[in-house]
Image 1 (spheres, rainbow, N blue to C red):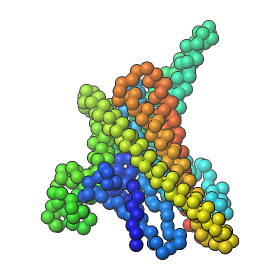
Image 2 (cartoon, rainbow, N blue to C red):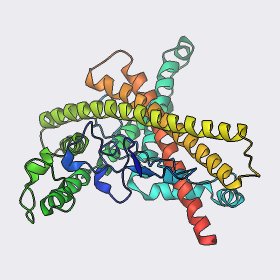
Image 3 (spheres, rainbow, N blue to C red):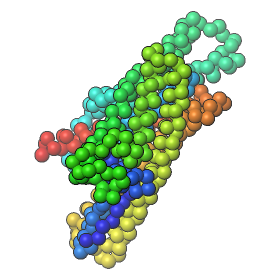
Image 4 (spheres, one colour):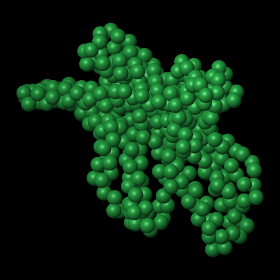
Length: 387
């Protein structure tokens, strides 16, 4: 059988391939010892073999708090995977289940997770910041200066400013100890390579069979995104501890700057991988569309080959959904890149306006992905319970 490898293709049973950006291991970035990518096999004798690979997961990494900019402190982002889109919109059962899923139920499921609470707080935080921008703009106009500023208006601005700052700090606390995730990946791979069961035979500095590798040796052979997540999360925790007053502000400021740079480079890598994934999905979509066109020209119809037509239509619909959510992810990554650039390069002009709007846009896009994921999960739960 022929073997076709797709970039960012991960086995659903291998959680160690997930990196800081939610991406799977790729030969271009990762060492052989951590190469857990698998391939998608196609039977050449089959007229319509499986054609949709499991594309990698898109997400973003964290970046730390910087006074004045209030960066989006995101460590884990929800991803829209092909399994989440494996629902037939034209199926009557799916339509009925979607009507039964209430918006309140979806938001309840979102709030149950710490990541969901982070997204909810982020929406409120940046909505307040955008409102304060409009309030300041109106307050600076001549029409507003003609009227006397009331005590209530001044107190409202002070309360909202304090609320936005408090929400930012709360979100930082929700993301404490996120370095445990990359640490667990490295530790598990350490013993896997040492036992010789899953480690690559060509991996350098491999320990004797039955003996685990040292942590430093395994960490140095780890994929760069995993190391980036570990260092980034650690630096972000140092900055949060400094804000709590447990360590000096100077140390916390250096940790914030370092975390900002980690987030900046992680976002650039995510944009590159997002472009690669979109190319894969676009090529698969063109392949399916071309096959459907050839079948229609050869006289094959939905009546003559109903199963083949339904498979192609369902696959094309799923590919289009994947491409849509990849575009949503790309838009969010662009917003994050603009956001963190103001902090990394210390841009002063228009910083308050741009960070407020890009932060709100990023919050809306990431919340939309999270909402879609939990809604599809509830729909699948209803379908499985009714069957």
